[in-house]
Image (cartoon, rainbow, N blue to C red; front, side, top):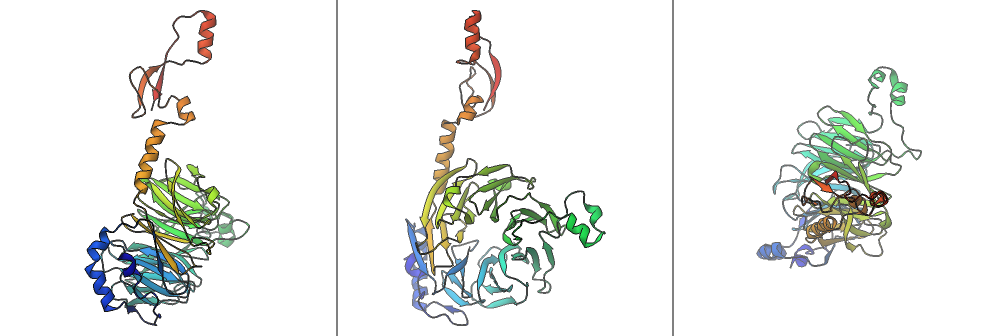
Length: 436
């Protein structure tokens, strides 16, 4: 029933204005809505959206309505199906406004334009065909009145719908960055500014690939291989990380905001501590064999689903680092799975590629249980490094892995035993060692 409701009118011709699905189909969808909410997608459902490849995906923040954009400039809102001509080529889509059914659908194009449509009726609310001079790569809704865009030239722009359609704030991730202690270069002209700016790599890539939100800050994954932190209140670039030698493709806050995870084209996951975004605190290589990470989306605070260049969806655990499962693969005729999105509950995933006109829906309800099993397995079987440090062993006062206790732990089978045997010592010394 869900597949029939989602595929209603998928083969009909797209018109210049929005066209809703047939009345009979919508009535059937309404009558079976209760059953659809309880329906569990066991494997995968394929949806065909027109004839062009899908280049952008976004789930509604309150329900399972899925917005998608195609490379021929059309946008579709699945369940109920609404379709219309948005741009010449849709690069990214996002839902904007207060949480609820009245949100606006925000879309941006490769020509630097953005539009806002009513998600219920499909009517055009706001249009700006000259927002930027280059293609917009990513969108981020900051609050009901403001949103941020990142473009190919490395500009982060803040737009306020209460004011004019021009950008209220524009910051360049390279030129507007001043390292700490270089404030004296502010009034010394362009040459001093360039000398205080961290230089980009040799290939010259400086576009913004993905943006994410932390309280009071915007995180930008840049194609020059750096993570940039921007303060909207102070209206400046606060911090820029070291160069990692490979473009960053995505960035997400994880672990309740205490960690920030960035994906790279080499397949590595870079971890940062909150407030320490200049240098990485850890690195995960569990996906390097799968190729580069094209896109990612979090499923809960501990799980990240990555769409890799091997056209597969891989679910990984963040601390402990482990690959939990491979959810599936895009059709074999596509070279990469470039877009992935998760619904608000985290039980449903959508994946698409610009080389295919199909959207695939995947069930992700089993991922939290796989994460719990991995955590339990690590606790029962600590690594050799932890065992050498006295983690997970038994102590005289019963200390174990559940907490940190100080107990008398005897070192056996080591050079101390051999020394005691040679010296004829009957009682070996004990030491106070912390046990986690």
